[in-house]
Length: 611
Image 1 (cartoon, one colour):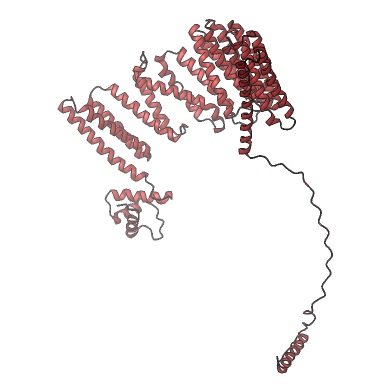
Image 2 (cartoon, one colour; image 1 turned 30 degrees about the vertical axis):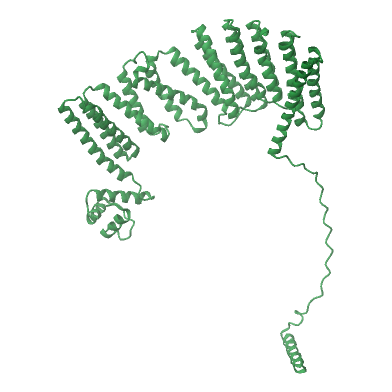
């Protein structure tokens, strides 16, 4: 820069200073001295938290469990191969071999208990392997070496089983109870000499059932009594059949006693621990309950037929009483029914239907007796939704009986004796099915209503076949039924009903083509064809009208009604002016400000393809 430039900048700064003083901006623009910021208080030191060990992933835990079971199995196999090796080499006597096996089993149990101080869950695998070794040593001592008697072996199995259940309670693992249950209930099948008398076998299984039920209540695990529940029925049944003593009274008493023991245990478990059955638990209890009923009923019926229905009803009453007692003890305030209620309802419905309708009631009266269940079906269908789950088994049972009675009427060959007044019964079924479909508020779901309607048509058509002998009379009756159904569908604007009428028309056509045209007199053929053609033409005409009334041209109900009316007038052959006159005469409101006119109708016909 030269001197001229510096002088010019100096003059500009002087002028700016004068302007600032004149405007009073010189003090405001002067920067204030920077305030000394107060020192910020020191941040509080974070409170150290205890380190949290991350939970292992599911895959890692599964791998760990698999390795634990693999280790336990390896120890068991090693013990077996060691015994086999020393036996083959002749190093030790059988007594010493068994002593080594027992020592290995006890050592595995003791090692697992010692390791439980560090990791109880993972340490549980070693005692399980030790229990298996002890069981095998006991069975080998009796079955292979014959060193101990059957009763001594039975006592050893009992002691080992009690120890296994104690270990299961200590480690909180259900595998011990499952293992003990398998060995306890399979022992009478493995040791033939145990099956001395059926009474001893009954006492043996019953005592162990009580033990397992007590352990389940103490451990708060249903699996502890569920596995013995299955085994108590299956193993006793197998042992009793192998014994072939013929003392069916002991078997019947035993099965009923097991039913009471496990039903009471399930109820007391729910009440004591405030744990109602879940859906999975209810299914697990349903299978042995069904097995008990079938096996008990067949056993008693084969030996005392008059007593079987009474025992069946008594079991249903006792199960219901046990459930109500548990329900009262739980004190549930909600209205929803737990799965246990559905289970009890299903059992009571099954037993009642089987005894009342298939044992006490002759088969020929079943169609009429099933009709008497109609008020029950309607009443159940109208129950409020929270109460429906427990009533579903009752509803299904009544519906199944009704269908069975209907099938016996349609196919009388299914029963040896025909139902009294079969035509009246079939007419009653047809009227009932029509009433269920047409009466509002019957409670039948929409998907089931179609099946009810077609069943009603089937009953009516079969009734016509049995009332009339001539082909022409049957064709006329079917045609009248089809046309009446189509007219009713048109009046109700019910497309489902109209489609069902088409099925009747189709059945009429098939009957004519397959049966009526062959072997009939010419006059009958002509009459049948005239009736068929007339009914088909009338049905097609009515169905077109039904389609026009039920088709949805616009989502808005008012506009859709106007479009449907215009389509109907178009089908009558009216032009645009004629349609306008009819709409004005009928007082049909128009959404357009200028009202109905020919150009508007023409535009609507083009937009919606109304013809």
